[in-house]
Image (cartoon, rainbow, N blue to C red):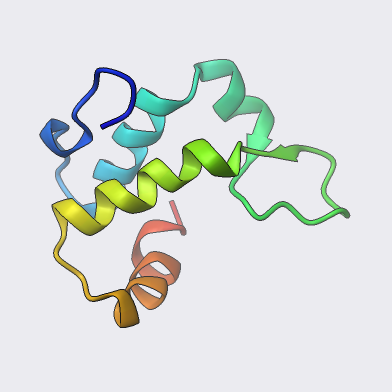
Length: 83
């Protein structure tokens, strides 16, 4: 849950689409257009999205797609993040 939104009820055609829909529910259009995905490195001009709120995406992905904790980083790096 993020605020009053149950993120597991958000639909998506794929894990990529689902992650985009969740990000749209958590962050404003302005935040998404002016920021990068965490962790933002210092060489980038744009600031990273708030990592505290970004953790809601990770939690929602783990609930929606039952992925073991050992495999989640690989799943996120290969399937969700490239969007």
